[in-house]
Length: 194
Image (cartoon, rainbow, N blue to C red; front, side, top):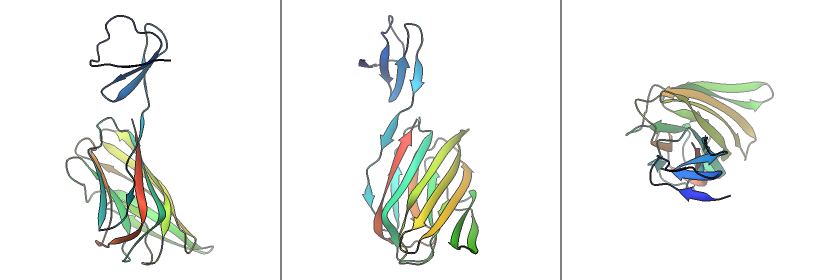
């Protein structure tokens, strides 16, 4: 199999079967007359958490799915909920429709509606959480989220879901908290796909 990097999306002549790349997108050719876009997966740069937010900017326009990964025991110095916010040109900080729920024990569940971002529950400052949140494009700049996290020190599991319609093409994502708490442990990274 060969890989050919193109400088134009106009094919001159007939390509052999294999992979073609143009403008960050990959196309697979299975015959002399057809080609189909293939999914591309890119991993971001892992960040050890500190400060009040971590941003991933300049995301390419072809992104259709983003996985946000919290690991190594993410925590903050406060009690406000952690959240993921996305945007086009700037961050969207309102208008989200979503909620989170976490099972405290076999007979008790806490939940809350959320409008300022895609929620990640936060109970106590010493809690450490690990898990993933997946954001998927539903078309027309609308994004849907689904995630699961666990507090590793207390064994509380939480689910989250939501959606938001952006005013333009998504180009940024950040992890922050509702109350401006400071992150004091853990790491975050993203994987994005087109």
